[in-house]
Length: 292
Image (cartoon, rainbow, N blue to C red):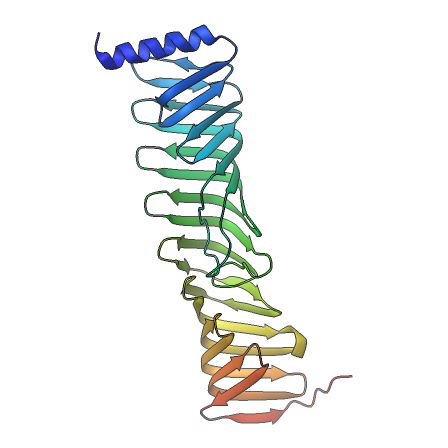
């Protein structure tokens, strides 16, 4: 008998000996430890099944679920039902504002696939992630632990509290898909989205930015609604400079209020000072719609 088979046989014998409280230590299916009422294992194929609720650990995280199955050789594990993953160290699943707080976080979902060898996690069904004042929901989440890349899909909703914010300082964000890299700080929103920031609603066809620079570029059919002034600004492209509270609008810029309309080639809006500066073929017209 080879050393590997002998080690597996001894491991299984130890599991059986534990009876109603099984503990597997020393690396099993890519998990450092497993605590369950029973584990069924095949020493020849490496396949194993955990038929009832369990807890497990791997590096800087803990995992629990209703049941699981996997292979000790390929280090691929699937967890099904009430999945909870606690990340002990900082993990960014969506772009957050520069300087925002980080710390332990929790991911819950219906189903989780763990490729321990490649350090990849695939979560599906009612995905919910919470870290500090930030939270996120999606239908599907893919996280690559090595590259720190995250992709969220399906009714993605991200919300931040206070100054922490998400995605370059947005207070909230809704879209179909968002990809981010917590190491570089880059994020991409490839489709239509809606976001809020300090009393301003922003939407566009797509966006990309960097959380470390606190900047995002919005491209295509950009609409910005300023709540306290009942103003609406539309343009072809906009750069949001969160660090300096500036909005730079470019191309077919139009700003409309109940009583007037301004048109220009480009415009700069200062969020802090509530000032709007327009340049290039500026035209001002009275809409005749006075406030009552």
